Image 1 (spheres, rainbow, N blue to C red):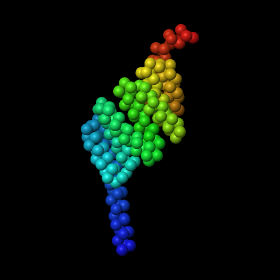
Image 2: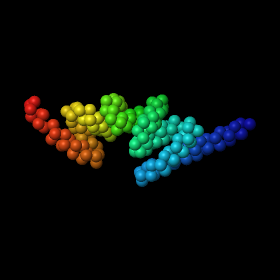
Image 3: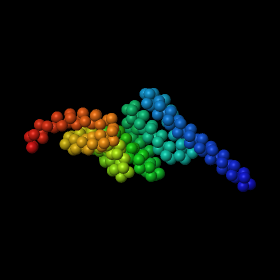
Image 4: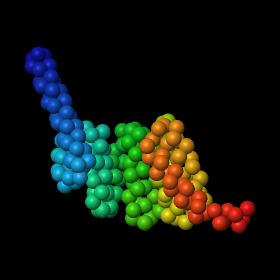
Length: 203
């Protein structure tokens, strides 16, 4: 009886491991298709991965699949659908205590709301992302949060605050060797040039 129970346990464990690997592989295939621009194909694989992750109770995998789907729908311009998927992913990351996933998803929500022309809500999400990135020592995430909030502040009409955030983002990106530092540098030069007459007047 004991041997039968052990064998059933081993069989179940092997099946779960196989399904988990299958879900991860489907997610990876989705990434490949997304990166090659085949978004509809990517959605198919992400949805298959999501189904498997839910079947086996893999909450981490489920959160990742939801986030990936949100990212694809954002690329397609279906922003409300993207927000819904990101919010589901965020709830899971918070449930399982994945602070990195939580921070990343908060940033994605900020991006989506910025595209929806809701800079105020975007800034709130970026502030939460930034707080988590600093808490866990995620320099890349901190740089992203600062830069994204700079873009949102600029869109909100707060150019001076945007410059301060962008300068902080640039320091981090330069320190970690992020190739996107040049993009921040170029935008800063543009903003400073536009703001210069104002600075001269009040100085």
